[in-house]
Image 1 (cartoon, helix red, strand yellow):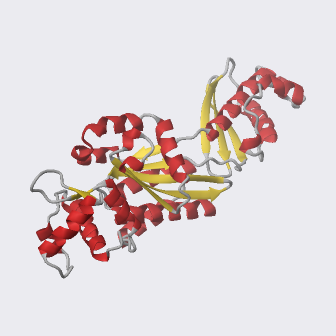
Image 2 (image 1 turned 90 degrees about the vertical axis):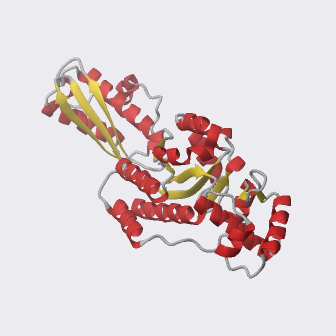
Image 3 (image 1 turned 180 degrees about the horizontal axis):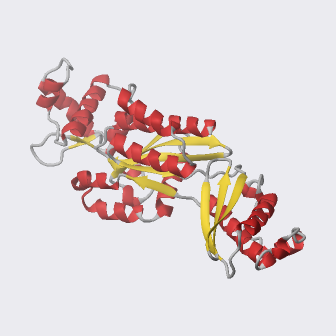
Length: 350
């Protein structure tokens, strides 16, 4: 589509339809936009746009609405994005500057993004392939119950409670803690063999001095070492954090019969992970998938705006916003881009 005026007409239709959720007619375009032509000329342009598949008439005597192709053309021609307000920028800065572990920051990030865009927000947990074990804490909770905490240098925290047949006092826990950290601290997560059986430790490592005095001896150590292996495995799991699903209620009529498949897809982490992974293949700072451009049929009536964040300690992932195709694309793209930028900066500082 090379005609600049028709491009302006298409932009007017998209902007008005997003704002009103009503089909847009030629008279409305003339009244709301300064194009310098008559309604008849606008109608001719609309007829051409419809013939080319950029707009459609939902019913006789109605105005026009954008198609997926029309939204795509609109997005590809965006040359100006709405800047975030001072309050929005402060909220993002406060988010990333707050002292917290990785889990806490990602949870606050996805909630903030849902609030900024009034859509569903998703964030992919980073795969920290180059991260290392920073420290392992072993804490006694009650008789026979031990809390094992794995902390990585990327800020990731995983924990697990282990039940033991015999109680272990603080002095004995200190011995176990020292031995476990001697084995794991400083090692890359990706280099730890998840298939290692605790029993293998008995042949690879001589009994630590004083371990025989620990209730349960090497068997107790083996149980807690297995817990560490389980926590390392948890750091490698691909996960999605989501917020703002209640925002779908506002768009229920727009999704129509597609609402149920979308909600079902939200329950399947693998579907969302495949969605974000496929968008990574676009190799763009901001990736936008509109309607049937989405690879999964459940999202054929939705649009997804995603950006990469991270690149820290070998990690990278994507955060995204999902909503109806009738989306305020310039504002959504600005929010996604800004949040991804600030979160990346926070991870670099961390």
